[in-house]
Image 1 (cartoon, one colour):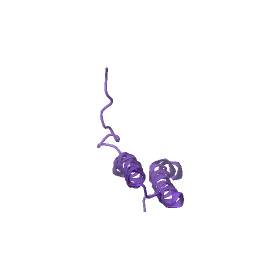
Image 2 (cartoon, one colour; image 1 turned 90 degrees about the vertical axis):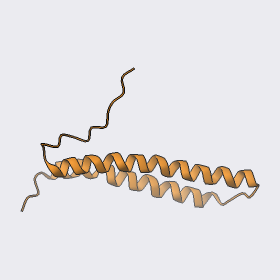
Image 3 (cartoon, helix red, strand yellow; image 1 turned 180 degrees about the vertical axis):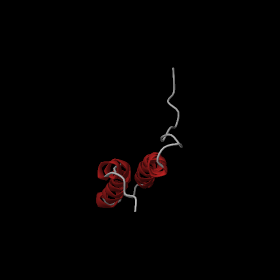
Amino acid sequence: MLHQAFDPGSVEGDPAEYLLGILAWCVSAAGVGGVIIVGTQMAIQLRRGEMGEGATYFRGLVIILGACVLAATAGPIVRFLGPLGI
């Protein structure tokens, strides 16, 4: 089974695209970590028998997903706008 290696783009290309590629990979990893943390908090509350308010966890998930979408779409938006050189 072949595994795809981390490749945010070529270093020889545009440095902004390279940086946005790394940003997209890091945000994806942080998003997965955030969802795991929220799930762990929910499991701990349930294990203790203290039912937390669902809105608190839902708000955390919405913030995580919103941040992921915002950061992951930054690269395609910059590519769509074209070169932004001064």
